[in-house]
Image 1 (cartoon, helix red, strand yellow):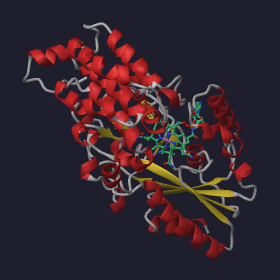
Image 2 (cartoon, protein in one colour; image 1 turned 90 degrees about the vertical axis):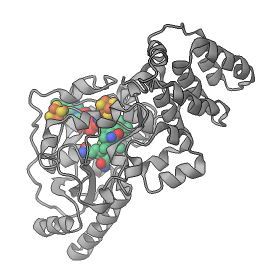
Image 3 (cartoon, protein in one colour; image 1 turned 60 degrees about the horizontal axis):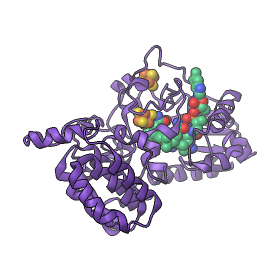
Image 4 (tube, protein in one colour; image 1 turned 30 degrees about the horizontal axis):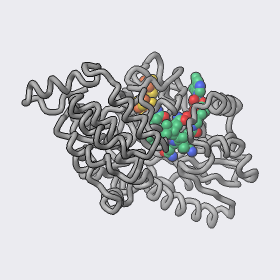
Length: 395
Ligand code: B12
Ligand code: SF4
Ligand code: SF4
């Protein structure tokens, strides 16, 4: 039975398949409780509200006996970190550059697998990809698909960091595969590369500090503490995944839907800043970026513009002082404060600040205007002006 399920899953285009009992270990449950108790989930309230079901697959579905865990390879063709040294461009995480949203691609294949299992073995099935209250990574480790590395994501010996996960839970009692062992050893590359120091300890992530959380999940203003570290990352972050030495075994994705779309690879910040709602929807149709919404993307783009050290890009930030969204206006104020000399900023503030009705944006203006000229963040702007050939200095 297992062999034919595995064969069917591979035939449908999944790259990895494993089997595990449909339950979470006491260790996993304890770690999840600690995560919530420490508030590491930030404003992802849905993690806490579904905690009971999320902590154990059987709390969600008491009839579940086994999990068929699948992995879909989205191995990028280029190093996702190359764009980080191109400050006039936005870094979109590799998982969001694919031709189609992995949720849709994996769900379609999982639906076919689940239906086939139900018909062939007369069993009950439920399928999951990412958004359901199920802890997918520990389950995938139990199923032998990989191990949870020190960055907390699943690492595969065959595909490195680049596997999406999905599952079919079933009422069938299938013999489990051998869980994968930890192969991190003494390596700590992922911990060391993290720009925001988001790992309180190896294997543990404080999502509130993670750029993926700040740029994708966080609804409000991006905390000042992290704005410089975000650099030009406008959607997600791949750094801890990209540096993993196990990627030397990774292969570029072969599923056509997992191929990168060129227009989402390092788009110019100036073009992103110009997107209105309709253009945003068009560009990101079929991409996970669409769920972010135009306002939060522009918020992120303005942070990246502020970090660009390019005075040319200030012209693309300034129109956003009139944006309908306070989230966008606040980020525009911050971006201009990073790029413009103090007298120019003061002149704009004199025009705009009195009309501003939102308290948060007012606070942003106050901070921007009180900041001392010569502060770290402004010094390089002066350098750029002195050396006009040096457009877009690296962070
Ligand atoms: C919430 C969430 C996020 C949050 C929080 C991530 C997190 N680590 O908690 C944010 C927004 C930050 C995020 C970011 C990303 N995510 Co995400 N995310 C999820 C989601 C929905 C839930 C994860 C979860 O349950 N977290 C709760 C914590 C407590 O669980 P945990 O991370 O497994 O933590 C374990 C370890 O801490 C471990 N532990 C603790 N101490 C110790 C000590 C030792 C010795 C050991 C061995 C273990 C250990 O125990 C905990 C429980 O198992 C899953 C999908 C799902 N339903 O599972 C996708 C998922 C994890 N995300 C995914 C991806 C791709 C990403 C990003 C790479 C996207 C990007 N490029 O921007 C980043 C990676 C950031 C990172 N380093 O984790 C993929 C990962 C695929 C994979 N190969 O693992 C998933 C599985 C989605 C999918 N279906 O493919 N994500
Ligand atoms: S995704 Fe980026 S910010 Fe988040 S933990 Fe990894 S390296 Fe740090
Ligand atoms: S970078 Fe090193 S420590 Fe981090 S997951 Fe990969 S092997 Fe483990």
